[in-house]
Image (tube, rainbow, N blue to C red; front, side, top):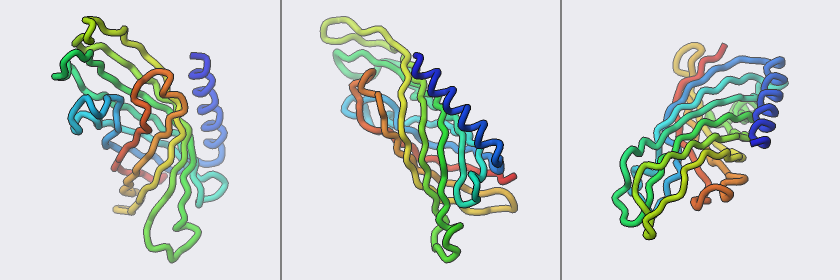
Length: 201
């Protein structure tokens, strides 16, 4: 728990420092996040959850590099036990905070053919776990718990201007967990696919 608070303090310390440099854009995206259900337990449509991400950012000394502070949320929406024999079902939701940078190569190379950008971020994910139903082979289930997952995030995206100060943005992110194995059997790295709008101040 102490690690969680220290990480959040670090995020807001950095973000407040960056904000003194420039705040020039706001964005809201929606899309699908890979949740914490095990792939061999459920059908593929239950592996991804719809979620939202709000991001604020601006130039970091130069317009070619932006800083960003984001918050995102998703819920896997599982309210009933999965149809699996001798298997307790848990539902998960996630609220995450992250701080990072975005790099725009098109601002270095005017002739660059694709409006691509790259993202890197450190995130702290507060995961809520709830027991839904079902029992193990021994007729028991473990107690649900909340936990915090730290991750190093990498991403790539596209940005298209659609009207004056409004851009259409599409981002694909990979979340590389730094401590997930402490809490879950599912140790694979997670990802997200988001589409939204950015307003340039």
